Amino acid sequence: MNWLKNILSLLIIVCLIVLFRFSYIKQQSYLCNQVIIEISDLDQSLITTDEVKNILTNVEKDIDSIPILMIPFFEIEQSLENHCYIKNAEVYYDSFGNINVVVENKVPIVRIHKTNGDDFYLDEDGSMFPVSSNYTKNVLIASGFIVDSLDLKSILKVSRYVCKNSLWNSQITQVYINNQKEIELVPRVGSHTIILGDIERMEEKFENLKLFYSQGVKQTGWRKYKEINLKYKNQIVCVKR
Image 1: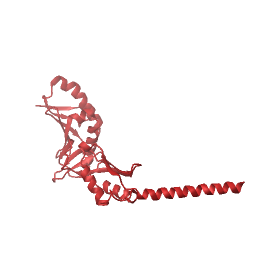
Image 2 (image 1 turned 30 degrees about the vertical axis):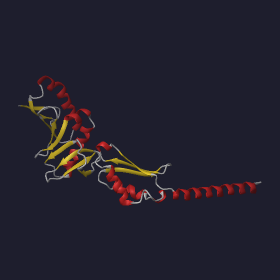
Image 3 (image 1 turned 180 degrees about the horizontal axis):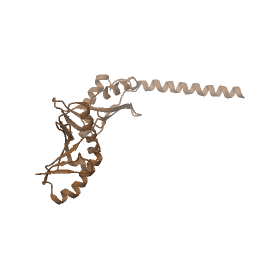
Image 4 (image 1 turned 45 degrees about the horizontal axis):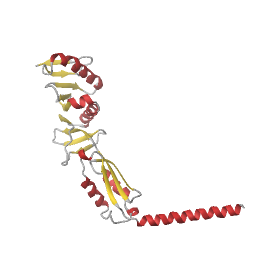
């Protein structure tokens, strides 16, 4: 009986191969039904749907009229991810014959104005990309004596911390590097300047500022001081108007 089992097994394998081959040939003849583009946070995106479409047609201009399995999915993904505003892209087809293009934007957390006139964004990963004519993001502004990668590293660390904290994200509007390479912060509420110094003990400095806001400013008001200096350990030095 073993020979009968072997024949049956062989027949099943042959049938599966034939079915798979038939299915593959049939899939090759399927044309794209439609291209569905999904962009994260589209209302605040630095790249438009039309720009994504242009990237697709630059890789394969007949994407709507060729069999699905002939579409160069990998090349399209690579072209999308080479765009300065795109962090990640996935391109795939579904059971309805649709080509799905899912684009994840780079999200800027700070806009850099360098002393040489350069103007660009940084995202949380430290990736640099140009400002857009389509949309201006309402993010932290960094300016002053920004000349090298160390300055950018300091700005990025401060920006990350500010953006992840709801209090500081609503209060701090600008990061400034002064001519002594100290970090200054410009608040939204109050006409004072906050001297952070360097990025050492940064969390501690912000905690001290929070304590000062909740106790000192509550008693004296927002306009008494023109400078709040946090750079010294275990103390806050204030300059009155």
